[in-house]
Length: 377
Image (tube, rainbow, N blue to C red; front, top):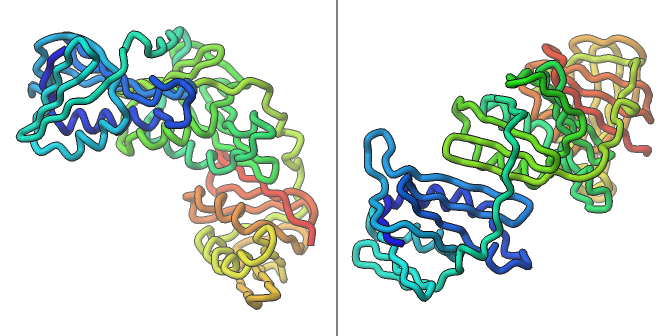
């Protein structure tokens, strides 16, 4: 194997694929990054067996030469190659390998001689049947991941809740996440090649967190392909492969109230800032407890009391009230997490009693819902 490559393109690719590489794996070769060279370009792969990220660098891009290939081949580089490439002095890097699994790397006045793994021992990436495909804008996918991912469970005792449930029906894609104390739902319209429908695909939260890091903010079509136990994302020259979680996601429809007894409309920014200030005191209290009290049809109070720190009281104007006055205590962190994802100027909060879950949703559309369990005080 022998080639010369542009430093910036190589560094970006290594940055992406290294996100899937784990030092905790029990398979030594998976601590490295696979590099494969053929006449079309260079392919880099990182994997921890649950997540695989692959990126292809073409020989030319926009009529500019990126790679000069003299001899094809493949090796598995140590993960610290990212630190070496970053520090190399020249914009061109030359790679050459001998038969003893040693790679020579040259850039400007710098020369490295590294021990590498045999690429033949690297696990084969499973082939994904591409019969079922849906398309979505990268910016939109990035947004709906952020609007739901925060609500997944971090407790491994219920593994299925550490993932986000994906449901698709009538070209409407729904993301659902819960840790049993709160619930986040986001729904968007997508394009599919067929009449694709599914209702129990659960993607690990860890996978979505890594995917979100490589999704660009600009508009770009992302292809999502499903099989029985794998999810494949195609994004330009990047392939992202993740295993799916086994098991059946709980029926969340049973915990969403059908009819509210109190409904209020508030300015999102004002209620967020009031709870945020109250949380400065509630951080000293178990469960970050903050209390909401509807005083009358135009005013609500947010307060928090700490025996050590003191008390804070905030007042927020109610834009509209329907139903009964109510007092309810809740976890300020959970509520702030939900409010942070809502980009509407006004929100609706629906209550069904002081000890029942309450719902937060945007006032201008019905494609998002947050449910939070109250705290008994």
